[in-house]
Length: 270
Ligand SMILES: Nc1ncnc2c1ncn2[C@@H]1O[C@H](COP(=O)(O)OP(=O)(O)O)[C@@H](O)[C@H]1O
Ligand SMILES: Cc1ncc(COP(=O)(O)O)c(N)n1
Image (cartoon, rainbow, N blue to C red; front, side, top):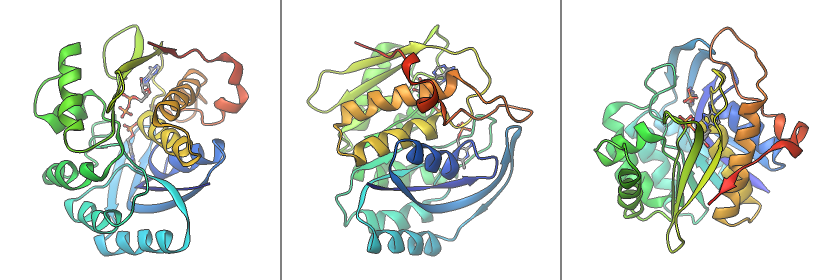
């Protein structure tokens, strides 16, 4: 099975293209990649960003799509409106499932999407997507209002689904609660929650990239959206629970853990 990630490179290896390809590999799918920007990054922060031109992003995606039978595509850091428009031009002619992780700001605070690109993300890319996986701050920017209650989460998901998506997962990693609970809204299906213990760790660099890459891998294998999302939650939970403890700052998750620690995962779906 072949997948493709359209994202930024993280020289520190914990997020972006590197997290996506590691996740694809661990979940036994072949990963191709389209690089939107280089970041000079480590566990202590983003030290520089060097974007790819929109034309060259398009050239990479064209090369991948012309040759490979890609079964699912994900996007991460897209950086600019021009890059979003370049990929939209190609993606609107395909019916490959598209998973959009609307990456905006790195956990360390660096901006990974120019402010004026939010409109292109929302109005041009999201209508082509099958699944979108915002965290709470991203969902707030996409909807334009504060999300504090269950009701806010439901209305944000409803507003995002109305753009034409099949599924929205509002991730709860940023909420201040004892559990890490994500809420899944799939068109035509009763919304459900996925709950795990919240791991008390600072090593959460790249959690969102890893989660959406795992959804992409599972969907490429032909699993239902629902099954793909639940498996992805297990993958990311294990990766967070068994940190590698590398780097001097906010370290990466452990992409090996899914195979090494398999028996020890509890995701409560309700
Ligand atoms: N400390 C944690 N313990 C357990 N799960 C977590 C923790 N932090 C995030 N997660 C989970 O990791 C996934 C990615 O979420 P999140 O960290 O919110 O993404 P992002 O990287 O986009 O901010 C979600 O399933 C979330 O519930
Ligand atoms: C290239 C790239 N893509 C995405 C993220 C987001 O990851 P996080 O939110 O964990 O910092 C990142 N830091 N770098």
